[in-house]
Image (cartoon, rainbow, N blue to C red; front, side, top):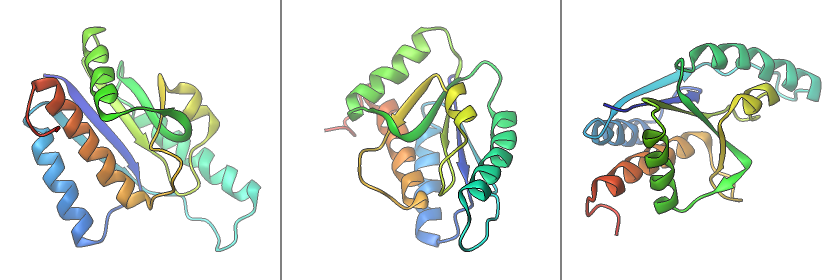
Amino acid sequence: MFEITLIAMGKLKEKFYLSAAEEYAKRLSGYCRFQLLELPEYRLSDNPSPAEIEAGLEKEADIILSKIPKGAWFCVFTPEGKELSSSDFAQKLKEIKLSGKSSACFLIGSSFGMAQRVKAKADFKLSMGKMTFPHHLARIMVLEQLYRGEAIQAGSKYHK
């Protein structure tokens, strides 16, 4: 069975986000083995300098890179990534599986993004569009799209 790992910086605290995340993780488990890894964001001062932000992202990068499953296709969510429709995203997931990969790993970075070396390691850079979303909401949106992508591949009526 195909395995999907979602690495997310920061921890969900609000009950409504937790409930939504649990629901989509449960739904995803019908199509694949799913694992969510919540990693701690590096603590910055209230008004961090660019150098402080870069140092924090580099420390996060060490942890992130150590958590990517070996041999997994790796995708980062980043504003400069490619935008895909839900159907195109489902097709991308299908292509990964057909390529012989047994797992995929997706990353939602911290509120300041991610270090360039993490982006450089990615097999694919994906954008959620030009709008800005809170990271906790973005996580729910990614979980829903992963579920939708799997449902489309299975021919489910979920995607209309």
